[in-house]
Length: 221
Image (cartoon, rainbow, N blue to C red; front, side, top):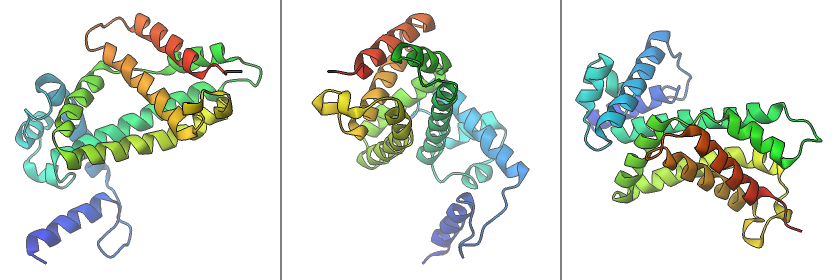
């Protein structure tokens, strides 16, 4: 194995929280701050110029770091994007879970939808960056496969939350599989978020999202 390959493996091991021998590493506050500043800068620059039109140097410049700081945290812009994706997925999951944690057993679907839709903080900047990346991934099969895996991970995280409040057996035949039902919920959420790219009316978007989710999740008898 070449020295460059060993160096890349060492960087990946450190980013995973473990050394090459499998022992855990300690993430310093400075390292965590560097990573967060790079992520924040990337989100801003991607939104302004578009993914695929931005180089590592531009992100480093916006964050106030060198290329060395970038490569100590990420191997590529794709990896950086997926770190943003995972952070956004965790945020959406937390918003949904927090909204439902206050629900009572006697609340109907309408009340639950009000809770969830009211709690979702849909970020137009993130929607813009994600849309750019999807177009990039559509032309790069390996990246597309990685994006599918990340989306499936989000679906798997949300699935227990969805099925805790909706009985898949009451859904139309094509949605009785919990995975399919959760994927449909995500599709409606993504469609609602996409409306922000052309129409900034967040109140209208929330109303539309609530109506679509209610229509999807209303039990069929």
